[in-house]
Length: 392
Image (tube, rainbow, N blue to C red; front, side):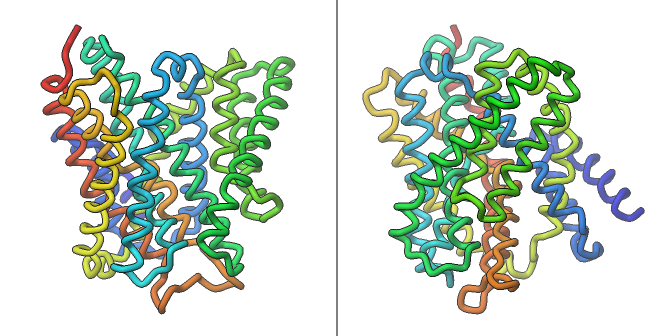
């Protein structure tokens, strides 16, 4: 009963945040943090987070199509890869000097924080598109395509890092970098193969409810395969590949995307609430200044990557600045994968680094990145977007 009341309050807090021009998930997250001391361990929190992650990945895949990428071209690919890589690897390099973690764990942290937030970016870019703002140079579409690719890169590297850490094997940083391409390739192949099978089945059983349930089950199965270490693959990328393939080849892609969007409106309440309940307030406060420094340095790395990515484009300095501020917000991906680090298990015990629970540390910094960047990025986009872009 207490949990139900807390979730209702979280929903109300989300609606209140929207009235103040902030993303709804901020209100939900804060209520989760506030309720944490009064709630026992919730058995459904981990399955709820996993389900939310699958929904996010499928939506990301369904939001990608080859026509958009071809239309926006090479700038979108650079925008979706270089900034996230510079941010992620900047944190990877500096975090071991500021925190009691090794480079593999720092890489995990870096690519949790590096992912941009579709929950903030997508609605804002769609609104600008509807108003014709920045449409002459297709800037909203460029940002949307870049954000989708950004999440693909960050989730892929994060998934490969988690695989290396969770096996409990003594894997060096260089070995990890070498293994990433293999895991990426296997993840893509298995994801596309699964999507091909689903597409053939949907031709014979076109019921929309069956399409939705079977797609979720197949995605969950890929996630389970990775956790069982049956294949050295990145299931996160495989799940996105399912969405991408169906979007390219299946007439059921649009209804499936609409169904997932409707599910997401409710799932995000569970996701951000349970993420809030997992936060260790005292640990987060103690590491606050260091965490803020790491997040700020990471954003500096992203800024450099953004500058490099947009070299030799026809964008003005104001338009380049808009692309930068549109990639500031962190939220959805951090909430979905931040707690994955909590499940790093080696021989039945939580993986530790110098006596510090690494998973808890990563989650706390992921939440801190949401609380700092989501409101700042959201306000900057809404306040300065139309000033920096030109309407047609």
